[in-house]
Amino acid sequence: MAFGTNQLHANATINRYIREKTLSIARRQPFLGMLMAKKRVTYGVTGKLQDWKVRIKRSPMTVFDDGDSLTFTRQEKHRTAQLPMRSYVVSKAIYKGDKLMNGGNEAIVKLGADAVSECMDDIKDQFAGRLFQIDGNATGYEKQIHGLPSACGATDDGAANIVGLNADTYAGLSTARQAFGGSWTGTWPDGYGSSEYDAWTPLIVDYSASLATASGGWSATTKTWPNTCIEAIRFANIYTGRNDDQIDAVFLAKNLYRLLLQAAQSEERLVVSRAQDVAATKLGFKSINIDGVDVMWDNGIPTGKGYGVCWDELELMSYQKQLFVSEQSFQHETMADRVSVDFYGNLRVKSPRCLVQFTELS
Image (cartoon, rainbow, N blue to C red; front, side):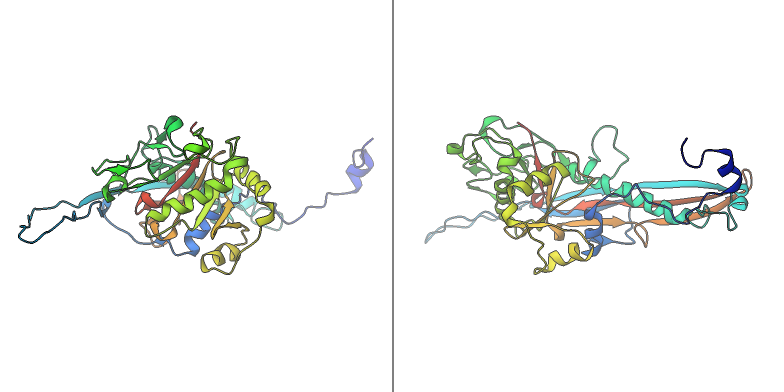
């Protein structure tokens, strides 16, 4: 007979009720916390759409010799990017009868007092994952936030390249190469070309691309993430250098980060000497550093995916004075307190040209 199951124990001994609750649903999601710590959240935005101008071309340089004449023409160098408002809400009801029964010393979990804080925690947890999971342009997701995948649609470029063939629209503008004209010499992103050729084009790194090493492919014989991961991160760091800003941080799915640690055992360390590393350290998130880029994992990232970001190019916009705002009211029809916590805003990548996705297209 198990202890505590006989009639003597049932009548003579009560249970010990522990006055604490265990949060067994927490998730490690540093990206949202670092956006806030790095002051990449803008509060109190207004307007039907968030509208910004993007310069996508330069004035052409021409040869001028003695006696030549200049030609002056009107030049269209800008496009308009636009993002709408998107919203999320978490809500619950606390009925008056439940509150009355739960109002004394018998209450272990405070149903009324903890309602707002629990809803706040719930929306933060789910919202953080959406930043990596949602393409706000995709069918069925038109009401959701424009997460980082919103700019990263691409197809396999076959055995011709180690980057994907961009095929997406972000903020109303095509991310495809040469969408705004221009030309390129060499196999992009190697080589050189006109500024407009890749003005709105993120770097989609196919870490399993089959392109031969001799033709510019990964140096590993077996072209899978455990063998290409360090080279892929270095590739992303170098080739986003075509912008004024290189990537500051890489966020990986758990499975990719685990395999990266195996490949980079001798390099693993927690770096705090650079200003951008301090935010992660203060928030309690450990990372490894590869060529000046902090690499960490985030629970919200789908398996097999990763993202490289430049903090200066990101803006999490809120239409309210806080990122998440609580509302409370009492409904007489049901005799219940109604509690909600909401978000109104969107995530803006100022230029997807500074964004990297690590994926497997091949």
